[in-house]
Image (tube, rainbow, N blue to C red; front, top):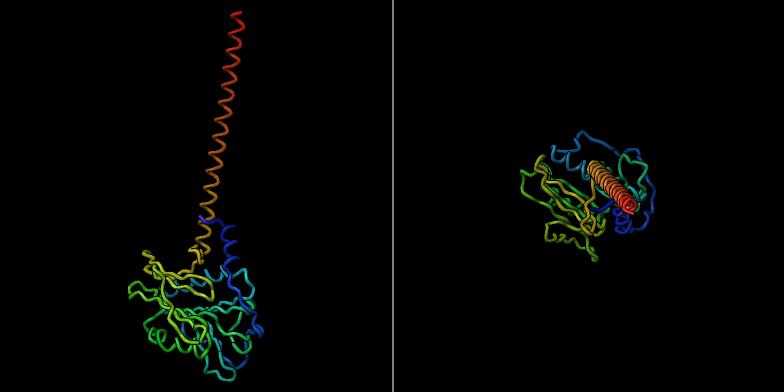
Length: 266
């Protein structure tokens, strides 16, 4: 099992390297709406997926002060044009300050565009997610990578990704043997696993060596299990030490008895 110290060493090893953005963190710019009447998640499947996935990314990148993770908030990508905005489910921006939190993300003010965007397919937006947004995110906005995933186990399996190559062309990311996709920008693998109890096809992040990035609850369980194993090991060690002590005392008793017998024979 990967211990916490082992994971922290891997975390430092695999953390992406990137330049600092040229702008500054901007909480809000007057005249650009920062909310609408749409709910964050289309279904319970999406709510479960978005909450767990965002938590994993937030916890993993928490050690780097220049990685911002947005969750369903507006991204305005053209100054003085309030019609040029998107609201992805989750996005990651490398090179900008993690804090303060923003009401919306303004690319011209921050001096950066999202590095990687994730959309979780719903019946209402799936067609846009598969087609229109590929061009909009990667070409019009300049995003490096874009992933889509279907979290509803009642729907057909669909996990795809695109990136811009060195020539600036959009190419679809080729899946690995297990069906996962690798993010070159974030230096992470993404694979899905069916959660039979919740019927959620859960997309999860992994380190390049296959180590899973846990949720807070999973890490708590791992800590409890590690503490239980440590207590069991300590109990076994104490029992073994007591057994040895008892054996040594018994040996000393037998030696004393033998010596006493020999003295009486004399």
